[in-house]
Image (cartoon, rainbow, N blue to C red; front, side):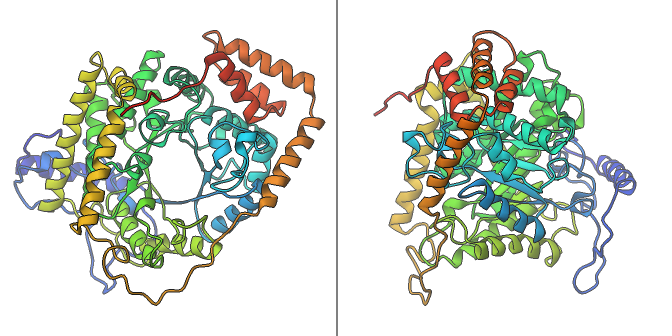
Length: 559
């Protein structure tokens, strides 16, 4: 089932393999019939010969076009993982408890801009930004407050941060230690994806090479100490939000993933051991069928490259597991209630594409941080899809659709052409091509051209957005939006000053000096960074030590 045309006998043999796996696996105890009471099969395939089926296959087997698990969502539904963070750690902790209490199954941390840039809240460059686009985290004490009364050994947590991801990870580990949780029990995801920062989001601290050094150290540490934890979430979301097409999001994201595979191999790690620690983060945009096809193509491409190019032998190493967030860029300030509809359609596409976890955007996120009411509507959107629509009854229900399969093949072909171009820019491997593409501005130019073309179509009326360039009359009234008080910044700065005064200054200085020494050698940076975090060194202090050792990075000017 690796892409060759499949005979009727091969298809039936595959069906038998799938059935054996399905029968042996856990299934949820629920009614999988239609609303009218009709019995439905867990999966459907062609009744006889089908020349396409070698590229489609059965759920739970290579090339995983139809999903990673033989049971699909009958075994386990996707994880509802709502992205949240605002103000200070106490305020965000309250929102997390609301999400978990309302049925959320996992947490996803949004950080404010100073934290994303490795700056403390009292840094002059942080003025006016503390707590506004996420939660402020200055030291391990903030992480303690962020997860107060939330058992880190039981709840999986995703943290969306890349530039200072490694020191933030160390704060998370120390918070777990202080809860009494054995570090080896932690399970969650850290974004860490620095390639996409240079390509799209522009939140880096150093040049690419020192960032890759830290990521390699993190991969080694997690393989040895926290085997269930995923130290890398390769992000296409921010690439798509910057204006990329679905094909560009698919290609650039998987290329970045291949670069991290090459990084792991360069460290002497076993691909079958470290590859399961790589996960992905995709955008679910408004073109319903294109998004479904994108997700299906992503699994197939990743499985084939990991097996055939990088030598992965186990299924887990060939799996592409991904989180999805509905498209923030599709939300409109005009008629914001329409955003509920957009989000529901995008979430349904993610589910039909087989996402492993999902965040649904709130209707007011285009204007401000979500209000509690809007956050609840976003959560309930997922729960209605999960509990009422019955779309989880059948695995890959659109598998075999002429349109969806043609789109899946088309997107796969577009991605493969892009991989060839990227490798040709370098010395034949994906990493050198990515670094050259970053240096030359090739990625940003490709995204800018795609964004310009879409905007041109929008302004000419070829593409239509309800409330923006069509159907603009409305009875809606202005929304009341969540506003972060200036007192958050004032209080955070005061608390940070009090922590500095109360800590052991000598221990902090010694730990930071040890960290600086490690930065100049080939030593793994995680242990000395953990030592600094335990001493309550701040995020800004840790990052400034590394900036002093490695310098900073400015994007070359291009015209």
